[in-house]
Image 1 (tube, rainbow, N blue to C red):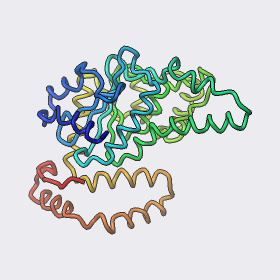
Image 2: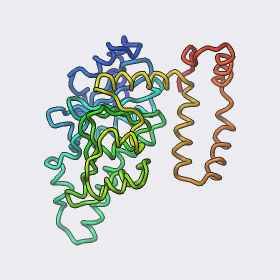
Image 3: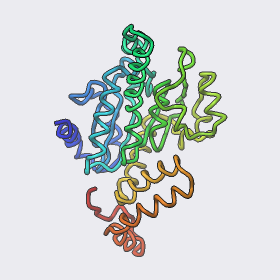
Image 4: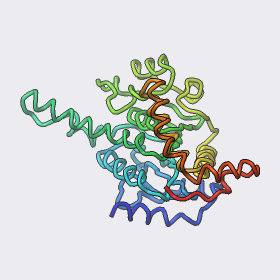
Length: 307
């Protein structure tokens, strides 16, 4: 049922085939969450591109209980959707996200049921693991995920973007690992996959200071900085279109192997890649791509089968 709902939401926007200004305006419009979601808006601004927008602008896109559940449901379905080859994530309104909605989450996280220490701790570990899954599912999704950040990206927002594959931001964006300011260590992903220079990561995590766009670019947290949100969304859609125009076998295999290699030695990564490609090279996509290259045509002119 969830797959049908997401695909129905995508069909509404299939008239926007090219990531031009109309697509940017469409994904920036205040349309509200996509039912049954209450915190996410899902659309398809261009062919094979799925856009997920955090949509609680009146709450600065703060992450409530529903958000943590809905992200898992949404990305689980996208991972299996053959009509999606790349995902763009953004935030509605002036800021990307203010982080965890403490008022909504307090009863579960800060005031657990009273029991003996062992049972309380066991239950707390279960709760933390559940919230970790919200961003782990982004990394496990074989479709590349491009995230576009404007304004504030605080706490859980940094956890979210570090699970994504490509990060873009506006000139007014700033990032803050806020957890130490509220008495805890970041526990849903910031400290583990943070693929930026360790000195920047340590300074952010230990002091809760703000990192602004230029430093984020210099440190490797983001790959491009744009003057404003509209330009950033146009850039995100252009990049997503480039990815979607390539062989899904090649693109998704590349993401899987990039993540595997990050977590293993060079020798293990090479061995995994050899095993992967002994089957994945047996695809028509290779010959189609080679022929297009010899004819000096763009890969986007090729019709690749769905994956």
